[in-house]
Image 1: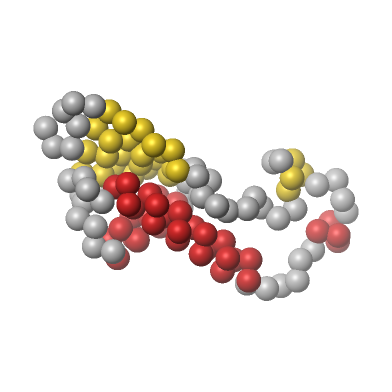
Image 2: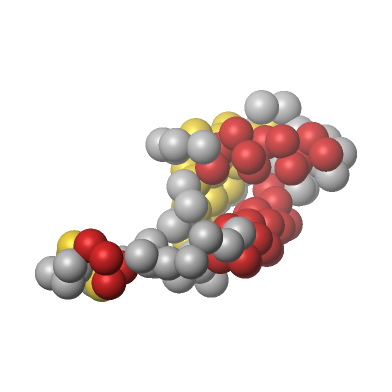
Length: 110
């Protein structure tokens, strides 16, 4: 049997499952990304809207993207030695990961 892997991924967590003839193993990977601005412990802020306004700047977006690329690198390192990889999950993270894998020429079947 060919060794295969599956990855459930979103921007906040990835679970990688490796399946071979002899064993099944799972690994959870968490990014080093801060939560959404204006939220604390997944609860809405009770402060007025104006106090939550942030200066228009793409610095936060660049920093978020940098952390995500580092996170995707960790996930890709877990997936690069497999012949077949199934990537799934909600949102845009799965498509972003697949594009990075193709760009880095990781030989897998999606």
